[in-house]
Image 1 (cartoon, rainbow, N blue to C red):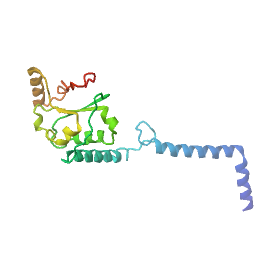
Image 2 (tube, rainbow, N blue to C red):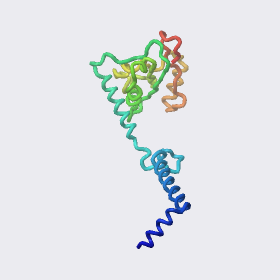
Image 3 (cartoon, rainbow, N blue to C red):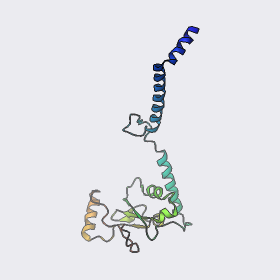
Image 4 (cartoon, one colour):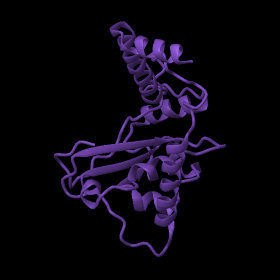
Length: 194
């Protein structure tokens, strides 16, 4: 028994064994760190597809956004923040009637949720309903759309030919033709091209 203990002590004191043990420890630490840090990167050797598509954070942001929309839809709400006189950023949400699931509420709500008053003043938010008959969209008449967005319109100021082209594309379900032909520029914000 004492002989084995003596052999182990001699082995540990050898420089080659020490270098090996130190290298193994560094490798284990590096491997553990990389497994934790790079498991979501599909180009990494540590990628794990079994949990990468979990929507924990997205689900939380979606719930926060829907809560903001619910609050804005309340008739008691009067102080909803809007863009200031000189916003620095323009965001346009384009939406069409999908039928089964509409994504505008979650998208718009999660974008605005958590913005400070200064951040909201610097953001001009427009919602463009891409249906040629926007009143068919389930959110067209919703109060929260007008309360949260700085503008919410359908196609405006189009020539008859442009509008007919969009109607034909809509009937053919050719969504490549449909798009932003005109986004209204607020007259009081001349230097801001949205």
